[in-house]
Image (cartoon, rainbow, N blue to C red):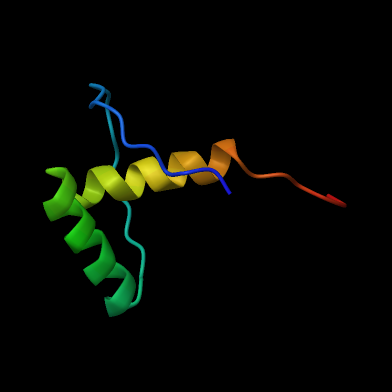
Length: 60
């Protein structure tokens, strides 16, 4: 599997959404945020975009 690569910020407009995640997953994002000097929100948005960019639909 390819690595999750963190790149410089891009200025764009955003909307607020609410999702429920486990405490363990949130803790991992908080740790990554500290290590990368990024916000948890930035990292989650990057991960969501990565998932969309690398999704294949089969039988749809």
